[in-house]
Image (cartoon, rainbow, N blue to C red; front, side, top):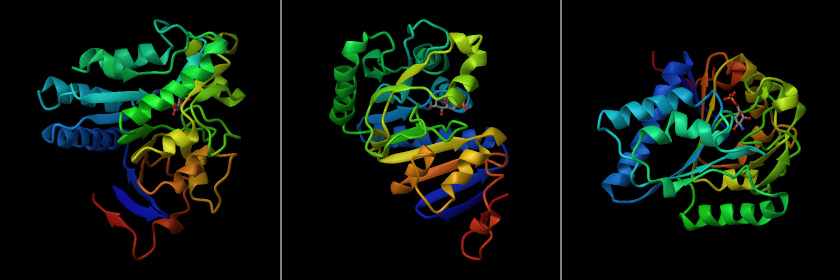
Amino acid sequence: MLEFKYDRIHARIFENKNIGSEYVSELIRSEIDQNNLNSEPTVLGLATGSSPILIYDILVQFHRNNRLSFSNVFTFNLDEYYPIEPDDQNSYHYYMAEHLFNHVDIDSSHIHIPDGTLNRNEIESYCESYEEKIAESGGIDLQLLGVGSNAHIGFNEPGSGIESKTRLVQLDQKTREDAANKFGGLEYTPGYAITMGVETILRSKQIVCIAWGSSKAFAISQLFEDKISREYPITYLKKHSNVQLIMDQKAASLIDPIFYKTENTPTYNP
Ligand code: GLP
């Protein structure tokens, strides 16, 4: 593993996504464990997509081996397609139940995922209440974050502002194309989503951003450019003081080695 700091971002490049996922699961386990020991709740911000699947698998294993209880864990998911029914196999409700919630001892009243079934005129107040619930919970302790191939975070597509909050968004053509296979074609892929905003994400106390595979390499490389830009929402992470960026070698392949080949920064742990 190669570890280095860039700006305020703490980056780690793992040999492959399996080892990276083990690292992230341990991080989440220790956050929950620590809070459980102190009888404190843990508030997690959760991501979907293919990237976190192995992390959820490992967390389920921890639970099965009696090493981890989710009874005092509260969760807020980043996003959900709109419109979509929760029992649709492509919904993030379905995904979270399949990959995590059905297999651990979390109280269903602790789970929050944006609702893809609302009428249009209900969405605005719903989104405000989503923000309020996060605030009432004490704020997100650890936000797990993936990245889209177009550098989106959550469903904050290129053009999203740093002050954006939970809202209805139109999905980018690239995002819909990336999802089209799952939905059985572009014409069946939702055009909208409800997502936490950039500001919502940046209010988390800690952010753990994961990226596996060469399709993420370009998006990741934008983090290592000088500027913060609306074009590449992932670059907003540079505004946060506690971000871990966890990559495999392929996702890191377009980072200029100058960032980790200086005398002060590299730490090699074979
Ligand atoms: C979707 C999700 C994002 C996720 C992204 C990457 O767009 N809304 O939160 O980060 O997909 O997905 P994957 O992990 O499948 O590459």
